[in-house]
Image (cartoon, rainbow, N blue to C red; front, side, top):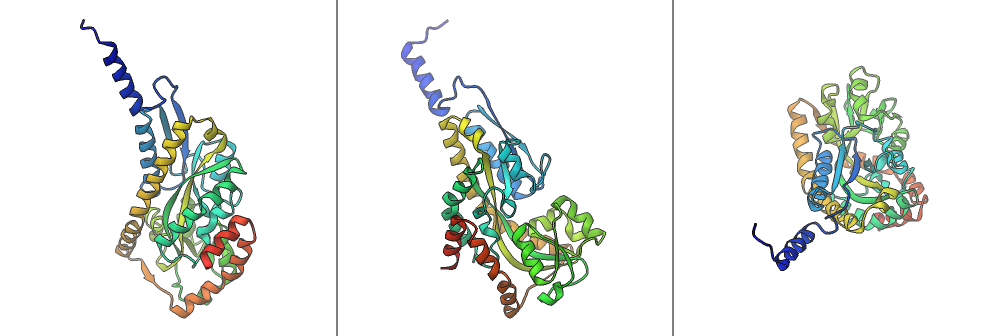
Length: 329
């Protein structure tokens, strides 16, 4: 057998460590990462992309177990699941995070965001404010996940053209803020988990539902509904959050890789979200869904219903106050 020189052996070892720093003799780390979106949705694809980056860059020493499509917890239950350590990482709907961070719900401040560029700018500004609130509740922010535009509502029988058309209807809301807006409009708001909405629409237990283009299409709500009011309430952002105890147990080099992968996953998601919404719209029209818009004057009436909600939300935490200041300056 040919003898390997000491210098050659050292060069091989150094090369390996440069590719996989800190992992040569470490035990495999398993991270349980749960989400609630359907398998085909781009939010789920973002989770998969993030997991792939982390596993590749740690040379397989970090294994991310994905639990998508609400196989472990619904979006309503995921915030407490990650806070208590029932899962290590979670993809959260920012409209349902009041128990962890009020400021994380900034994207639910309807009618204040101009476009995706503005939305991403505000959320990058919000990173530190939201993370401080999350860490006080035993979690921490990893990266934002652009979900898509929240459109409202999809209805079964009645096309919506004005506030008066909403009065008396029972509509599925998407978190606290949209539910409060619905109540102010004269509708009756109810929360139903996304996988259960189809049945509620099909049996007319509800008259309509709020969500995004992707959910309307992927979950086939178009089979039960007929109309969509194509008004953008929110440029909705989801967020990946880690259990703080689990995070603190990770080696620093792993934390650095995760944060870098999160930034890249966020950028990838942001690069596809607008295109995906356009695809969903075309597919919904192909299924016979009728999509209409509000008049300018009617849209302003809808926005005016949010004004007391803006004021109340801004008073909840210093982070909320700062973000509302940024949104309205």
